[in-house]
Amino acid sequence: MNKTPLLEFVYNRKKTAATNREAAVELRITFERKQKYMTTGIRLLPKHWHRGAVVNRIDARELNETLEKLMAEVRQVILDMMGESVMDIFSIQERLKRKRASAISFLEFCEQRTKIRQYGKADDSKERYNRFMRFFSAWGKIRYFEDVTDANILALDEHLVKKGLKPYSKWNNYHRFLNSFILDAIDEGFLKRNPYKWIRIDKEKSKGGIGKYLSPLEFAKVRDVALPSECLQRVRDVFVFQTYTCLSYTDLYDFDARMIQEVKGMKVYVGKRAKTKQTFTIPLLSPALAVLKKYQNNLPVISNVKYNEYLKVVAQAAGIDKPVSSHWARHTGATLLLNEGGMDLKTVAKICGHSSFKITEQVYANMLDDTVVDKMAAYEKTLK
Image (cartoon, rainbow, N blue to C red; front, side, top):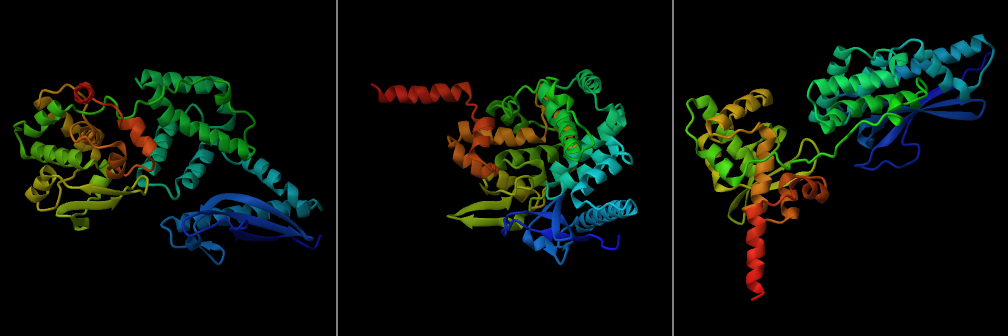
């Protein structure tokens, strides 16, 4: 057999790409006027593809290595077929799946898929994958494809229960990732059955920010409490600033005072959320400006782990028995704007940089009892 198939990576075959819309990279196999397209699992913006390679991305090297590896694997399958004097380009993908299945463990497969699933994601989303893989590798009861059984999924769930995790946390931080990798393995032909289809894992819908905020009185205690060290005072000041700006920890860490503008006589901070890429607009209230002035526009932000540890000490000093963490500031700020500030949900959504109004509605639509009473009392007066 002298003729061999031609291999070439093709981008945007279906002509769906746009400036802000990704399209797929595929491997085209051509032989005797017939063509077969294989998915690579990689999607890119037009500016990230040039002359058959990924460009202008931080992870370009890793993605190009993934493409080169796929090309080499397909070439090897073709060589095997030539040795058998058989050439069927439409069976190459199935042969490749079988070849991979005999050479890779499920754990290795998950590690490979993690790299693909991470590209284009925000840093905190990437870290969620890394955190799951560290846990999953250390747990160690599912390492090979034959380990993906109903019994082992149940064993994982029991292990998470013993760790004290609540249903939503179990699913969202652990089972969800494993389920996605199993689905990928089924698509690749490594597995035929997904245990999650038959096992009911309680997901208990998240209550989001409800319950994870300080009341106005509690926040005032944190803001005003006398603290014994400068370290704790700095942590409290950062928390106060974070509350009045509704910034997530990641966006707080990236805060750049040079992005402050003056609009209608008010200082306004305009930025883009690292997580959702949504633009947010935050008019800076006087307490937030006071913190900036105190630290000369250079906020003393420390690591999230240490920040959360010290916040619990600050809360304890203020007489608050709640597991306060950095994200409580964002929830507290949004709740204050809704209840104390009387702002509508759409305005709060813009300040928080939510990708949709529904997110704000689901997470922050909790009105404090006093607010509900005040609003109803005001309405009652209009009826007289």
